[in-house]
Length: 138
Image (cartoon, rainbow, N blue to C red; front, top):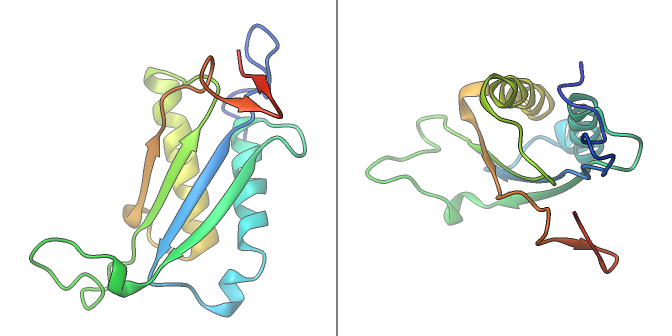
């Protein structure tokens, strides 16, 4: 994996990205084993994070708790992966598109899902509104 952005912004503030990855329909035991770590390592490489600076929380959504209007999603073979990302600041333009593409490919590879079933949403930038250990991210 190549880094899209270093682990520090121009002011030297750590990015500390957090990814919340939600799988619909579950995954095989072999895919599940070590999945959170594989996702954290892949995302950390993309973000250029130092060890311990990219965090992943992995969740499963049971098929009974997910639906798309007027379709039997799972019968159609659709098992989306939703990824929410919190970062200190967001990239823009082509750099953001490049980061999204790299993350989509990494998540698809790690989960065994097609890239067109990986959906990424960025939370608003965390600077000035998120704290770690009581310290406001600036």
